[in-house]
Length: 307
Image 1: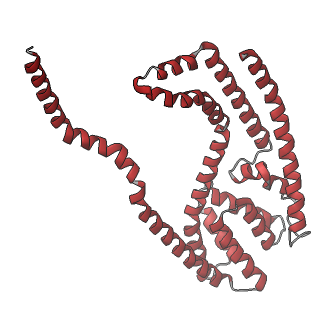
Image 2 (image 1 turned 180 degrees about the vertical axis):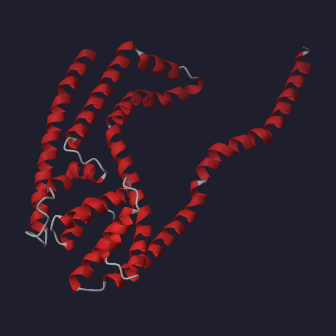
Image 3 (image 1 turned 60 degrees about the vertical axis):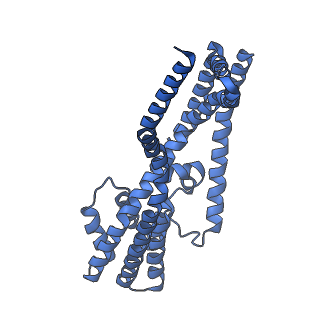
């Protein structure tokens, strides 16, 4: 029976890989067509920006910073390989009998308590298989979350500097050049803004470059700022006043976010206190009392039995 299950899993793994690749390709093509049809600037978009890379799994990986041409194949291949590895480990556990030994040990717990834990023991190998297959997904989510945090951390300072230079009479592009010259080249925000400058140097309009930047990043806080700049460009509003307004709103949002995080601290401390502090408090307070109680009970029992 185990051999049959193993053969089925080995046959399903390549089929799953082929189906995943086909589905990802179709979703990318469909998303690109829909985006092109819905775009209000159709015919004005950046022709070098591959829309297929910004939809589906490809767009998810692109916004997380994995922008190589082999990012999607590597992600799909690693997921399939880890899934196959999990299946192999599961079959080995069944062949060796580790699962049966664990189930027998749990069932031997007196009082019928072990019977409650048997389903969890049987589901543990499957849980391990699923978690192992999800490792690439969890890694990409972690990298994307870190990238978003770094951009949100650098954006208020960058906006304040843009506002200060703009109030001093420096143009938007010149101010951005000065800020990027003093910025760390490895920071995600600096990398994205250098991509925006590359679009400008390639001869594309600032509005198209800003919209391309907005689609590449897709962070609400950053998109709000870029939308305001695009609107100012379209209506001919002063860039200095726009940057000043955005800097003020950014500081207010950052203050609100810090206040919300501070108010959430007591709730977040409940679990560490229950798990880490209360057991120690119970041991310190009740330990001597229980020790004396058990000692008195032992002396009483020895007196009753005459031992």
